[in-house]
Image 1: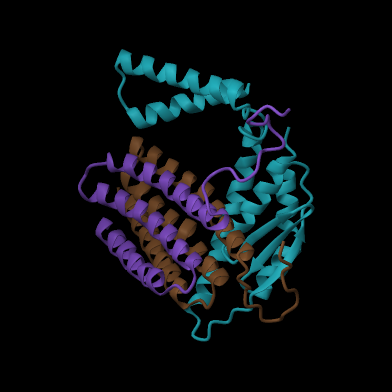
Image 2: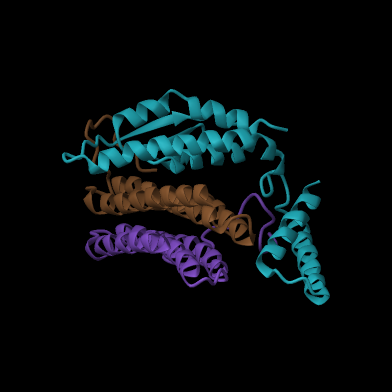
Length: 99
Length: 158
Length: 108
């Protein structure tokens, strides 16, 4: 049963890699990378069940968190050209004291 | 009340990830939970109705199952479109009006739109959301405003 | 527990089906916005079904709680990433292919 889930996820990862290889724009590649990350979470969980070691689920949780963070960081980099805060926040307290 | 609920949630998260019940580890967890709660409240100032919307938890019990059922229906529709030999898509972009009072409600509405396959919220403007829909039928279904009314009722809980 | 086994098989098979269909749509769709719709079938939907199948196999243990946590995490984060992708693509100037041409999106 876990073998079936693993096979399905592996097939989906293969199809997604094709899109990442062929994707015409950078956003297609980012989308493919994000999707592969989500599928990898499932793959890690399935592997933990296959080997009877449920500690792998902790790694899956951390991977799910890192996946969305990396996607947002890549998108922010392509939009602004840097990862820094592009504009001072107007609503909260400003970083540096205003004169 | 938000402090108590945040402390309880963080303690449950610590116990879930650690799984050990030795006194030193429990004390370390207690210290971490209190430090994180103090930091979110006093330094980051995000422990408010936006950062920790615990007042919505009662209405979530009715909103989330409805949303899950919508996801299942929309997912099945998109699956039929993908497997159709002629790929009958008619992509279009529409603006749907929003009637939520707070930013939390608008984020809930936009995320609900994105979470259902077939519609994606592209841009949040003041008073409306720009939505890209896979088919004309999906855009018409969204334009009826059913999801808007339900998410407005969801965020109106106090 | 035969019933839980059957439920688990059903959810895992349905999840695998939707996952593969979503990845297939990712290849078949013509432009980036429609590909995002195809990934909407895969990303929260198929993966969630597979993880629900795992939950039935694990029973009422700490493993199930962790799986529920992963599912909730995916359901909260995946629309955020999807919306950020669509918004970044639109700001970058990629025009979506619209069939009716009813409303060309104004560049914000």
